[in-house]
Length: 423
Image (cartoon, rainbow, N blue to C red; front, side, top):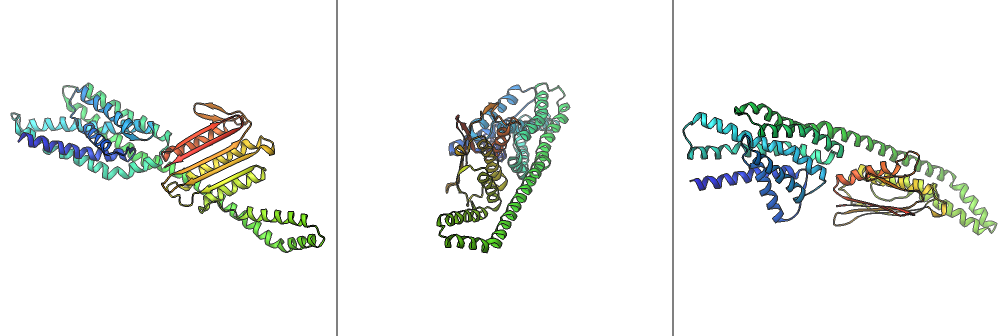
């Protein structure tokens, strides 16, 4: 009978651990391998299922170290998010385990003060269903909030979440390390830890994430405004071109009648360039295309030699705001650097491609003459405001981190290059 109860207890522990594992996967991408999956599942089942008793230093500390190690080694993602998840989730798991053991023990012995045999094992196994129910409801009810946090929170928001969670994290360890003889004195504090971290999840996914989404919407409105301004500008150019087309043709005809073929050819080239600048299409995404057109026209105005190869028509995994942030900031940096050069040395090369295997690659190379300084992983130019490159690339890096991509920034005395890969 005891063996059967042990097997049932293990199955229940792995069931609760699976829902805990799914909660962690809402933030971190598990490394793809069946063996690694089993290690993740078993390890997180141990973290969420270890019994914690009053003054139990070992069982409150070792699972935390195991949780951090699992996050670091078996999951992909930013280091900051991995540590934040440990600080956010571990107080919840440890509090549930402590209250299960402590409250259950007191209730059982108040009902059966002399029974220390099979009855306690049966009741403990049956009561463990409450932990399964807790983690099931936690995952079902909060997984939308967890997914929203993953998509919306930036590094500053994650730091704030970590700081808030540290309060309950510290309180948990204090309550377990220094549990008084009357153990129910610490119950209110532990319940407060539980509520604090669950509330932190709800707060982060509602107010903080919504605030970030509001900023994104503002950026979206600005991009839409830029798009319509660019569209109106192109329409004005087309209207003026149509209005003057008859006069243009008469002028070309006169040049041909006079035998001035070279001048007529130059006139046609100017007219062709004028038409092309009004109707250039880089991609099917209207907002991104408008941003690229605006930057391309600025490059033409600055007389910068350019090369554009854009093939991102099937790209759906990256939102418009993020794409525009990448293109606009890197192109602004490149144009600003080229302005400091003589016209014959100004050059910008832009390559963007979305491959069939789901990878977005982007490379921009520009010539430069200004000194680039690196300070705390920020690239600072010699512009008057002191950190032109720093601000732009910081925004780009946040986008790349949000999509778990990679960015490589390199430069020589004559060139500055940014390479981005997002899968």
